[in-house]
Image 1 (cartoon, rainbow, N blue to C red):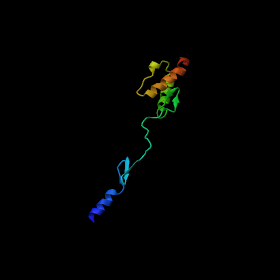
Image 2: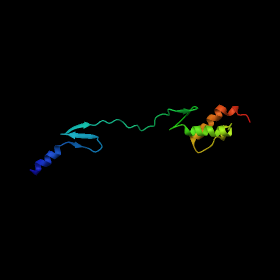
Image 3: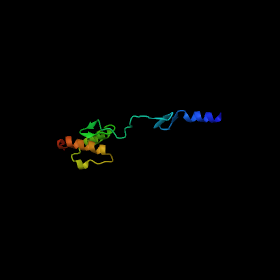
Length: 101
């Protein structure tokens, strides 16, 4: 009697952890899953021609900083953030030649 119970359990539905294969009475059926996006999507927002990552706040801060200081040369656009520097450069590209002083 114990042998029959073990035999019945052995032929019952077996699922491999992770959902890769499912066996039902020796029939293998591959389970299909939607692929997981592993590459970032392209930037959907731009700040004066520069692509933003999450938002454009770093670019905006760099632009405002350059505006407040009247920056006219891209070499003066420095900082720890690439987006901040790009915002500063955007100001110089657009307004740098129009600064009187």
